Image (cartoon, rainbow, N blue to C red; front, side):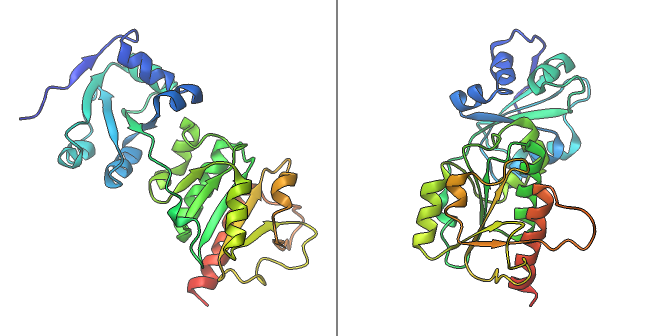
Length: 268
């Protein structure tokens, strides 16, 4: 028998206050939870068997049919609520809230995929724009990269804007948050090539052999790689520019390099 979905109508409700607090990193870290918004992300979370603690939908519009059809695939411990638009807006930090949101437990970081002999890993150093980080995660997912590493200077993976911009790809591959130096040093000890980009590089990205184990290290557009990380890079490449543009943004540049890696690995 299906349990009745309780109605949440007050922003002063303790649960609502807890969920609304997840808009801030310090509360996400403290609670070890994060919020996803919208039907697509929830479907991705269900398919990935993520730990979904609660699903909250618009009481006026009702539970979307696409999600209702998946109820049997949601764990029995997941709590279901219907809420007023005011509550939805409070918890998602927007005046035009989505038809539903969900509260998920942060997954445990698993670095087992990082050190494969011929692996492909994306490493981000100080990339603070959530849209860029989300796009890079999507691109890494699209080419079948083994993992993404976010250095300590990057935007929080569970920032709502980052989560939205991944379009569900954060559920598809391991994403590790941590200090870069010890991880890169460990990778180098195992024979993995650490590749960065440079306008002064003598080798273009189409000449480099991406078939070997490679960690692609990308920095922010304004600052580039930190000195500490740059010192650990043992190969730099340049993306050729045929037109007058001086550079690409970090998400576009990373995507170009990842697709060259895919081309070499699977289509040459």
